[in-house]
Amino acid sequence: MRTRPSEPSTYRLWLTENRPRLTRPGISATEVSKATGAEWKNVTDRSKKQMARPTKGSSSQEVSKVSQKNGGSPPKRNLTAFFIWLAENRARLIETVKPNKVLKAAGAEWKKLENKSVWEEKAKADKERYRKELEAFKGRSTI
Image 1: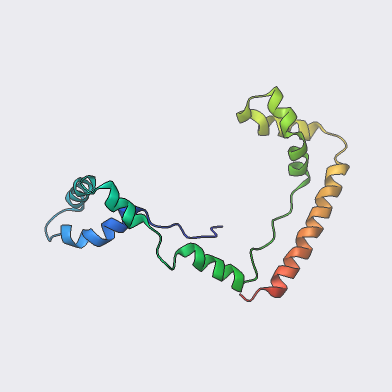
Image 2: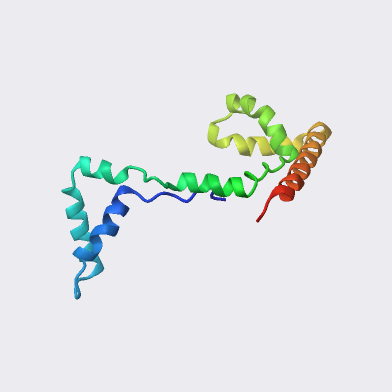
């Protein structure tokens, strides 16, 4: 879930201002793109930096106002027993296998594990924590 809309790039801002000037009837989109690209290369770095300056009402300030209105951000989801176990054992697994094979090795080791009750209890407690935090969040939220 996106918490903040992405801000337009400097090129996108420049293009929004200059596209109408470069677009003419009968010219294909490809030709317009080539023309805008060629003209963008000639824009100085100083001009690009001036375009990139945040405005007074930047989107990050707007997002913080929205999250304040809705009572902050929602609580972090609860972890499953496997992910709690993985957090405790990842460092050991990284030492024995390549980093891109850690999850596969972890899954195989988790499957062979006979006594999972320790992590299942932690997962149950984390689920209860999430449920309580979610109730509190929904109670103060004004969506």
